Length: 610
Image (cartoon, rainbow, N blue to C red):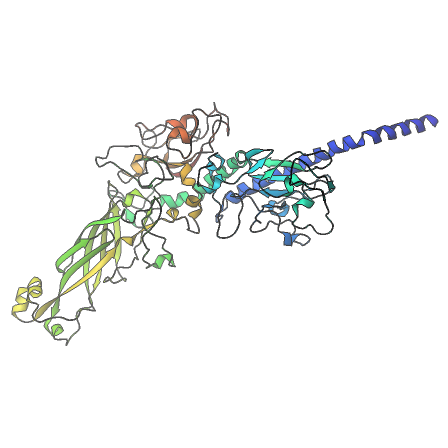
């Protein structure tokens, strides 16, 4: 019995001596585990939200927990918009996890960098693969917001902190911001970071540390870098593009009633606009190009998405009955209100005389004479209410961008009912339009019996018999029958996120030449379709959008953004693609490269053979 007592006493003494160190190690191990759980949940949440239809800020990191929710049934839900500091408790309920607490029983804290959090409804985020580019001179929002960690600038887009138990923070003579402070956490937590985070982190600014003076620091900090979160965002955006935007591109001309010459349309074939040349996307006009001789050139079938604009958004509803007149665009290198323009027109009709059509870039105006009975001259009988006509017109550069045919566009002098507007794309990218309608002549007035010239234009025998007169009328067709596709509009509620977040700046658009306006439509396997290695089947792709991941430090030559060459965009075999014949294959992976270290390209399919 004595021996048992002695051994027990000895164990108690020894364990008491070692407990402080063991306890610190156990607490740090526990904190490391819950911090890592929180980090994985946060990255998963961001990726899932980025993939959701209707998410206009893909890639944004959730705000900390709303203070008003603490202590209520909604505790753990993120705030809709972040406070200026971007600091607060981890929104565990929004992340879909249980509340994680550190070894002292305190909830974890989250700090989100500027540019990665939603501040208000009028300040959307701008996040893409270039957000990891160290470019302090860049004006792109996504590269301005990152946190400094342990004096390493731009080290993190967010940090998660286990605050530890409260204590008396000692003044730090080196750090003037670290005055003595007694932390208190009685009652429901308030928005005072210093009560939870030590003075080196409690300022809730842009600089954080993982260690501090002994006895005055017990925060445990885990950083999340852009390199860790961007691959998840890139994968989500590529998936979302393929599922939500690619169908819009495949139908860019079909649902707008434009046809392709020599094709039964719409069919399983797809026609897409010419690509814009691969150049600095921040200053590019984003206009599709094609040489006049039809020779393949860089940027014709592969390059940047032709997201050029000619008009502002058409906002009337419902879209099927839209009769709005969109205003010309006014700003940006991608804006040219005269790019789509009328170039010529011909007017015919069974009762149309002396037709004459004049065009400006924005308006096509046709004047003509119609026969009017003699009594109409005298005002005794009304003129005929309308006359049938057929107008054929040509507009340039329609196939050099994403356009939709607005069949219900306003046409002064043309009756809306019964009119049909059809068209076809020519090999040079112009559009041939046919309008079959009735001219509104019900408002003819002010006729003169002595309009002998007009009468002669209508019918010589009629004027000799004093039975017929002639009146002049006109109608006009605006160039706004061609409306910019919603994908070109950064403010579009459904598709604006893509361009506003500048994803087109890190994307490469490619099509089989047969799918361009100059092609025959569709493609067959082998030499006429695009090939994607490591996909099955590999050679049935009509069109692709290839997303470049963030620039990888391990890749040589060093990638520069904004990209102007394939080397700046891609890695591995994707650096060899282009307009050369035969078409070089794309690849979804490179067996000789490490994913997200020396290879990060992703491919979204726009169209492929059935």
